[in-house]
Image 1: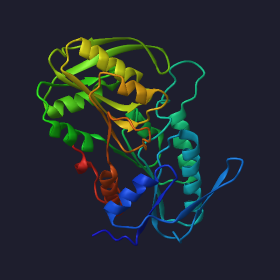
Image 2: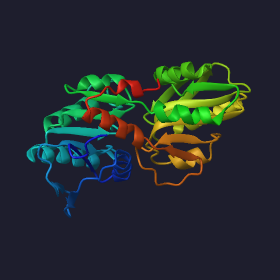
Image 3: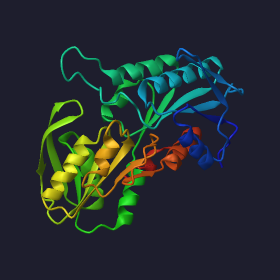
Image 4: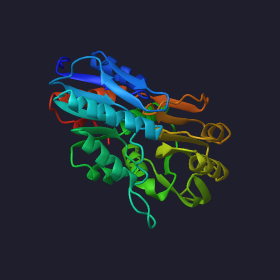
Length: 312
């Protein structure tokens, strides 16, 4: 049994719902923290109980990006100044991860900048899930525990008992992730080849593979405006697919995403609860990753390996 006196869990504003579920799974109370907001938008963090000599876990997804990232940085700094034994940032959704390289001249690499900010603030470990690009782990000089949403999504897909199943990737960049699902389930893989007119706008898309009379499941790491995923679903139905579903780790769902999903050919779209979803769309389903993160925190506290909890 884990010693709940050796560690403490705190939450930022946006991810309190998930932190409460994590604490429920761990059998410990959520730590007391006050976020004071000023009229100009500035805010300050204060811990309302002693954290001296404790392993502190700070749960905060960085979405919407700027305020929640700043909250997390202030939580880390306050914990460092309060003499916490170790500071562990639990970031179910790591924002800025799409900026992982220079894809054109004179642009920033936002993911590296955020990694540096977290390190300078004083974090000792990062626990995150389904980074947009695996190499972001190398942007840190501290341990990064990288979890996978497949731990909750694969059991759900198996529970559907779909016949003539095909796994699809919405773009070539996500083919490795989709291929992992296809191999585990022992089903074919289909790719979508897309070109973009500009960010968040798909110009053209072609299907590579056979979807006729198949039940298709599209696998992705996040859905932002839902332009790619809904276009892929519509094209697959036109190509003769029996049904199209989508599964993604992070429910960004910004702008017109909910309307697009509702009006698309998708049967349903399944996310984890790494990001809260407040716009009720009947086709959206969320699976909780609270138990998975709680188990990881438990293993970190007890200095046990986390690799054997991965399904794939």
